[in-house]
Image 1 (cartoon, rainbow, N blue to C red):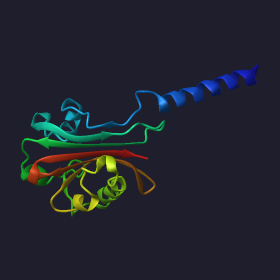
Image 2: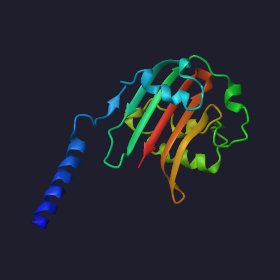
Image 3: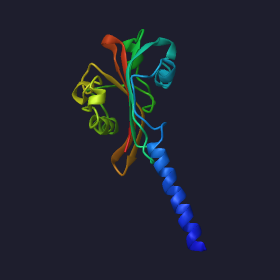
Length: 172
């Protein structure tokens, strides 16, 4: 009877995992985000969602059982002042870094997300070499590491020259 009960729990668990992985709500979403869906990106650093003009592109991957994913957005904004990105902050946890002047932990996070940037679904996203140039600024929203290797990162990139914000969130 105990083995029967444990077997039933195991079968229900496996069916639950299969339903989660194969269910209709766990599919990739491509170019379907609205301005409302991306407001968290600009609000996260206090740039204000009111600057958002439109979502140019997006890719939101399906989730694995452990929440592994890749989400990317390209957002056109109405304005950005270079002074907003370069003002020195005493707190290193809330500042922008120029793409060619990254501290080690942010550099590792850019390496981490750079592995996904060649995917055809996000061919519109700047390549890693571009993100590391003086043309881009990076805001490290969150970086999780296992030992010394990033396993999850959320980064916001801004290219002031054309007022475009790029957001990437990845977890393995």
